[in-house]
Image 1 (cartoon, helix red, strand yellow):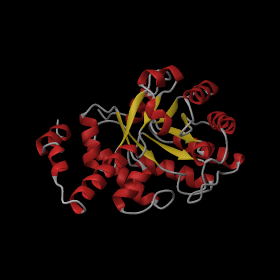
Image 2 (cartoon, rainbow, N blue to C red; image 1 turned 90 degrees about the vertical axis):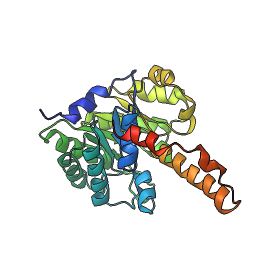
Image 3 (cartoon, rainbow, N blue to C red; image 1 turned 135 degrees about the vertical axis):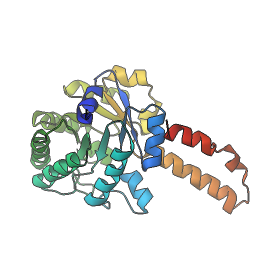
Length: 271
């Protein structure tokens, strides 16, 4: 019997009982994260940009994102969600089309933000709401469950404050978003305010001040999901930079001795 990964994914979202949605950047990293117990995998637009040798924020195409996501869906046995930036277009119908295409390749859900990429300008309030309304309608028209998360990114970009983020999240919830997300609240109090202001599950990005919080802290604030964004990919790239500098600048290869064995990697990938 075919598993409805959208339904599995939806059931994971329990406010006050968060799970970690691990953002991968290729099939190997997705398999390793699944092998370590990740209950869901997500793409990351920035991490994919690193892999492709290009820039984030509007420089990855929809076709590239879909192809990458499809590879992850085929590789793992857990739900996969897509970081699909602004839905790859400004108008509501483009967002709806993106949802239909995402559902068609087996994604359990996607996230759509309210920023007019490649700029950091937020969409006008009414347009931001209409875009998610259209996307949610498309999601409900699929022949399977599909978890649509709406992002209010103005706190992250510095374009609006938490009060405006909450106003947007409440409106996005009202038009059908299944989950809600404001990256980088400044402190646990702001995170708790966001979670209390809506009834749908809230995603938290484990970056900045939030890296100092524990699972218990996230649960107490009311979060339902913790995503990693590009943080794990960036940590990997930091290792490449640091070891590369040791070797290429200093002629020091000692850092390579700290790597894990091929058998250890394969034991996580192939279980």
